[in-house]
Amino acid sequence: MNIIMRAVIPALGLMVVPTNAAAQDTAALNSGDTAWILTATALVLFMSLPGLALFYGGLVRAKNYLSVLMKIYAIAALASIVWVVAGYSIAFGGANGWWGGLDNLFLKNLGRDAVSGSIPESVFLAFQMTFAVITPGLIVGAFVERVKFFPVLIFTVLWLLVVYAPVTHWIWGGGWLAEKGVIDFAGGLVVHATAGISALVYVFMLGKRKGFPNDLSVPHRPGIVMMGAAMLWVGWFGFNGGSQLAADGGAGMALLVTHIAASMGTLVWIAFESFGGRKPTLVGAATGTIAGLATVTPAAGVLGPGGALLIGLAGGVLCYLAVNLIRVRLKIDDSLDVFAVHGVGGILGILLLPFLSAEFLGGTGDGDFLVQLTGTAAVVAWSAIASAIILFALKAVMGLRVDEEAEYVGLDISQHGESAYN
Image (cartoon, rainbow, N blue to C red; front, top):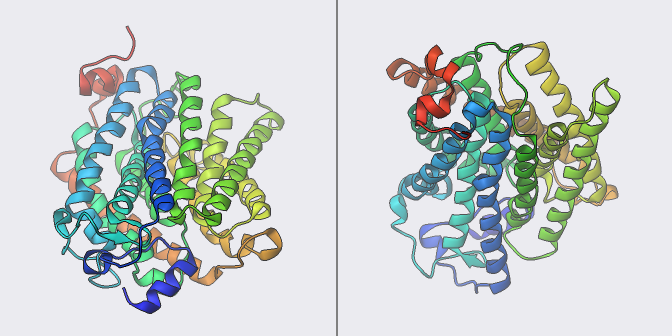
């Protein structure tokens, strides 16, 4: 990475770090930065294991509880290996603006003393690995209770290499969208849009659950849903605060605005349920939390407290309306509202960023709407097209969906031979 890129990229709030020879920087390691990113790495992994697993697991029927936990657990292990073998090289290599290349397969160029900015490259790599773990994990919520186990794992490998890693390179790896000036601080496009759009494609390829929408029971463990959401909320401080890649004022502000937006999203959801002819539910409040968090994620590096209040409000409102539109009115069986919450929330945050980062709201004043819109269109189109191709191939070769008997019995027994409850 040349001197100009070193100056421009941090100013845009992008997580772009060189690998290979460029990583052998003479910049001194900062022990405070390193300690914080080590902590943030653990927090982001904690979001998947056990946070996301419990959040999703509590939302399904009892007979499918373990199948959800198993998918998240297996994806965490599988995505980690994919990242080491090729994902990191594709995402943060320097081949060109579209593709990082395969020069760092199996991390063969990673030295013990390699540095990325003010932290060891191994720490940066591990931090980014936890993002690669949770992103395909998010997609699981779209197809629960009716999907085969092994096609999910194969999809995860192909999707990480074809969708996630290239998009990461475009935005965080100094690629063509970074050069255009797209700002995605912690993953509105890289994480939430890719997962949300791909989840929607998966739903259309898979079909609805038997009995949807009338014969499906309510979430079987609302308390577990809340516990998982609480773990996600806490872990998100590492997700967003760690994306500053330094223990400084920017990290502190990112953490603060993250909490404000999550709180606003929670309260918006409670208000909608309370004044919309329903009783306020714990599951609804937890969903509102995630909506606020997903929406603030891409803008956490440029917002101030005022902008955080507004983006959390917008995320809560729009994601609530999206859930009702997609699942209730259109009857699309995105089982756990992956697109409505993560896809809609992440894209909304990207597009609101230029307006809510205004200095009078406490922000940095960064962002250009047309540039953000261009980045959104590119990521949405690539995620949809590539995911559809992968799923068409898998469906033709091995099928995606379990048979009716297995779905009736439940995936815990039919796919894994276990039961969560005696």
